[in-house]
Image (cartoon, rainbow, N blue to C red; front, side):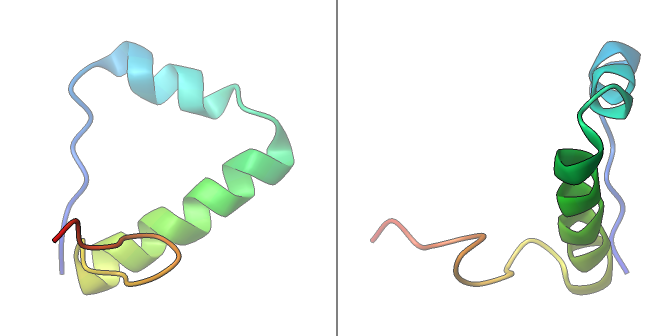
Length: 49
């Protein structure tokens, strides 16, 4: 299991003020990151090389 740490409380607070549809999408993605780590695959992550 992974953990997401925000570098600033302001960042976390700004996320809480996003539109509900965008915030819901972000919540789904961060749940996947917490469960599976940063290698989510397409369309979320893609290698550069």
